[in-house]
Length: 612
Image 1 (tube, helix red, strand yellow):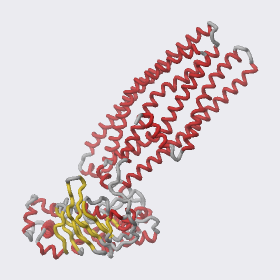
Image 2 (cartoon, helix red, strand yellow):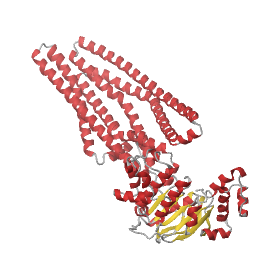
Image 3 (cartoon, rainbow, N blue to C red):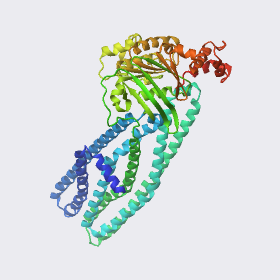
Image 4 (cartoon, helix red, strand yellow):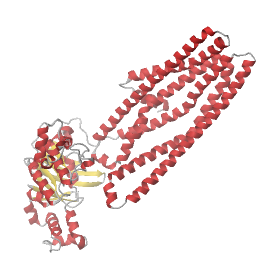
């Protein structure tokens, strides 16, 4: 697609819904240059027909006309600036909303493999530039062309000799500016890329501040960030020097052309071949023509930068969601909670399966625990149930319906999730719990918090439900955050509940309180628990044992202990960790413990049954 056709397509896409603003801007942009360029003609009249002719009676009307043109042009400039800003902000708002909506629609996998800093750079840097294509850059380009065309016509109308002399200058200026702005474009793009990298680095450091402090890497991170800032400073100064050199060169060129016009024009005045007023008007017109000429090359560069930003935004929007509603997706107003996996296979990347031929079923209200070594596929399995991903083989069914044939809105309404490290937003406790259901009343929120054993600490807070939790819930303890997450899940009253190791990071007292809350939440719901501690596993109706993506055992706690398989091995290994130093009760424990140095046996035992 040619540059002009691409530009036209993008402008037409922008003006949908805001056509009246665009048309008003076009009209004002076309009207301003003639008003401004009429002022030199008044100057010519003032010199030739008033001052040199000695017509004092014409002085006030001439000045009044000049003032009227000045006020009119400035009022039009203000209107243009206001409408441009409105259009730019409106387009930026629309583009940011599209980006955010698309981010929400994209799969969890995309969020995991995409650096947050890159997405933030799109919102912060690329959107304003892309939105300014139609509202700023293209309109400025149109204004410059109108000013140039109107100015040239008026100049030839006043004096074709001076117009020819002055006409060479804009052509030379345009060629010079187009040449010298090439390094400026490259330097500006390098600055933008470095800013994006710096945003990524800053976000990463702020997010990982706990780890930086804990491992004493503050000095190293400061040096790295300082080096990046110095590199950005170097690149910015290169842009400043190039820009300053271009400005100085343009100023010098303008001075030389001005002197040439005044010299040649003065000669024509002395020869009687033109009037002094015409020379004054021509000099003023030349200034009005030279400025848009100098701007044109820069505006073309601006268009290219805007199109580059739009390409980056378009590339993000081009990522299709891996999980979305199918054309034949149906609504499920209510469900009983029966879950079935039929020969399910899954891989995050082709050729690297993490689940293979997994088949089982869970009755409504049944508690199913998932255990297995690290990397066995436990979290991947529950992610398929929540439809964060779709299986690459087989089917996942809810009440006999393939999840791919259920609308995402209905599915998510029937499934609740409590993560190992549940995210709390930097707002109030009330809003974090109410995330579970729109329009929940205060009594419903309090009931959910009470059932989750969270109300006992919430009511002691000075502001109760309106207490702000800080970024990522930093004002609360780990156990308090988890109980709020449980209240959030409980508020949406799901028929299927997924607990992804919610107690693994808690102390004994917090775990007991949380376990009481979980007992209340699980009652009557089909529950899947990615297990770490044995308390929940023992009470599960069924335990699924995964190893290397395959379902190798299933049964109750007692049944699996008697089978002397992988579950017994993991159970004894964890028990050995809790009673460090006691002999193992099963031969498999000896084999597992030999995999790690004896001094670290407790840590290994704790991790063996935890992995995702």
